Length: 115
Length: 112
Image (cartoon, rainbow over the protein chains, first blue to last red):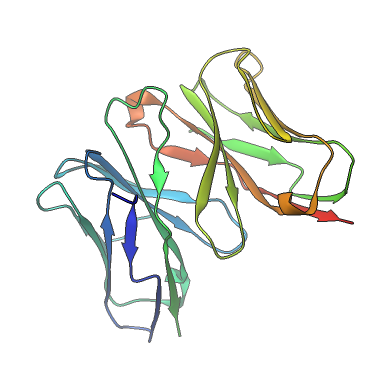
């Protein structure tokens, strides 16, 4: 296992199109987080899962955004009817539930550009 | 609402000199993290600080935590060009699912 994997790494889409991103966490990690980072800012929390259950959604996650983790393994983040303001880096992170001294591990991110 | 503030936002460093980045957070938290981010890249974990008085060091970087003051510092000793990056601090709360709240970042540029 080489860590958290995200696909695609880059996505350019036209305004109004739908896009879907995938995140494969570290295999033994039951928590999975999505963050969004706009240029020059720190990452902002979007949502997280414990196994297949989505436990919290930020108010940043409008009704155009939906995330799933159907079997408690990989997760998808879909954005419908994309807007230019959705352009950002979307970061996925995973961790064990009982984190102890361990931090969350981040994937390489998916950079979305809406034109 | 948990808020995390970093300062300065930008730090221009001279090689060989020492500098400090400050991170303040607004409410009691369980852990404090420092991450490094290179342009266009993801986040690389540097340190996890768990308790008051914790100090961790790796190479030219040293992080400390004062939970009473809700303050962490990242100290850079004898800066070198390779340390040019953006540094983020973040905190989490176990009862809130350990989701991270990040500061705005400190962009560091080390000049020869």
